[in-house]
Length: 410
Image (cartoon, rainbow, N blue to C red; front, side, top):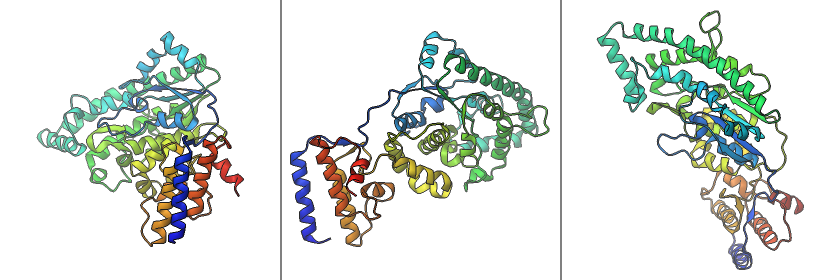
């Protein structure tokens, strides 16, 4: 980078910093006032065992849509609990006012009896390897251990699956009765022990495979099996008047990367919530309005390492996420929701490091966001464009979005 160009860019930055006082938001259009009501269990509530969750899927979906989120989900809720919750008049009023209703339910109906019973108590183990080891010890000490555990599941789970399916049908019917205009989005229930495609020690464990197969039967059903011919997800996929986000398929064979199962935590991690958010948004029957905002999703995408992990875990999901996270976020290099001087500085940093044959400190989708004119190169013209928009917005000369401003400069 020539010294003269650097000096000119630095002078422009200084002048802008002294004259402008308001950072320009990514989208200046007002919210249409949509309300998202989230119902269900700890997946929707955003429970995080280790406190590291960056954002729940419900938060990312509402942020992307520019909608207010009312989260009524309850940790540990079963389908029976949600059905009971819907009899509350206050909940009914809230649901009736929703434009979008997000639902996750059924996981606790299945996982609670599978992982917490007289034969297995997952709460007593900090890792799945420890739990499997304890099962092996039990099996060695008691040759009937596995048979007894399977007999217990054989007695318990048919009723659990049947009741869960019936409750889900009633929940969907109740939601349609309470609100005839909202888009109701049900997630299928994923299998947190489905690790077949994962290159991890857990994926080769016989005990894990046994548990995973059992859970799969409860969720997906077993052909020509009178007890499990239809699973919980068969019911969800067959619901009328709802949108189905097939999260089971998204997490299929990849639970190690999307959940905390290694630590006996069936909940999604931050990358898992990001994957669920993308699955839900893709399934929703919405036309693009031009106000979609992928800023929060991009923060999670880059902040969790998903940008590096997902290409090999799920290339198709990663490709769709890359497009999603850049919605209305060009010019906002640091993904803080506004276009400002620091973004121009970041663009100049990329330009200078590239010109010096150094590896840029800003890469991936953040570097794409720095390419304001989308000509495939981050250079001074991008920094100038960012600053010009910042200055025009601050002076109220231009009140549209950065993308609209950039299009006018072409």
